[in-house]
Amino acid sequence: MVTGAAGFIGSYMAERLQKEGHYVIGIDNFSDYYDVSLKKRNAEVLAEKGIQILKMDFREISGYENLPLDLILSFILPPSRAFLPPALLRNARQIILSLLKIC
Ligand SMILES: NC(=O)c1ccc[n+]([C@@H]2O[C@H](COP(=O)([O-])OP(=O)(O)OC[C@H]3O[C@@H](n4cnc5c(N)ncnc54)[C@H](O)[C@@H]3O)[C@@H](O)[C@H]2O)c1
Image 1: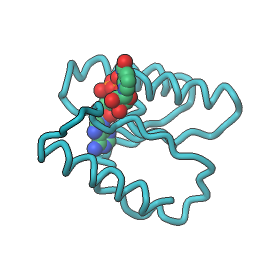
Image 2 (image 1 turned 90 degrees about the horizontal axis):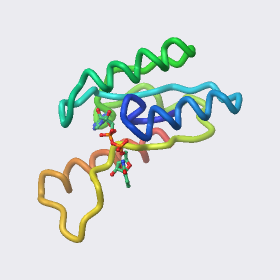
Image 3 (image 1 turned 135 degrees about the vertical axis):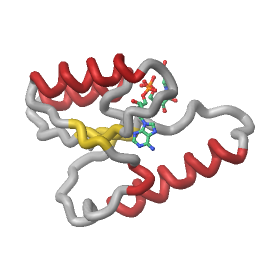
Image 4 (image 1 turned 60 degrees about the vertical axis):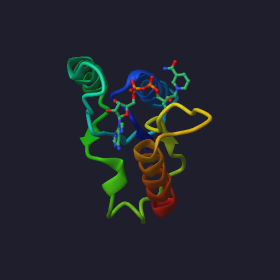
């Protein structure tokens, strides 16, 4: 599973993992942090290679607890800084809780 699969690093990782023979589940909420058309383009390129991206907010993930996942690569955390503002800290905490939930 690759979270942030429509983003810059996540889309490359999803493609690379598939090339290495893994079955990849991509997750992305297509946030408008920057131009969404770039993420849609990434998703189209991945779809052409047979990788589907589920459009969802990873913080609200449910029903994936029993999937036999070998690996979860998460590329959705905000960049680390010495002090995260409260909203970003809450966001990061929710992402980590979701990761723990499905591990
Ligand atoms: N790009 C860099 O140079 C760089 C350098 C160091 C670290 N990083 C880290 O790598 C990670 C990925 O960076 P990037 O440049 O690919 O960023 P990006 O913004 O291109 O990709 C992140 C993707 O995550 C998605 N996303 C965000 N919140 C989500 C949520 N709650 N649920 C589902 N999807 C969500 C966004 O829609 C986006 O497509 C980040 O954690 C970033 O801090 C990036």
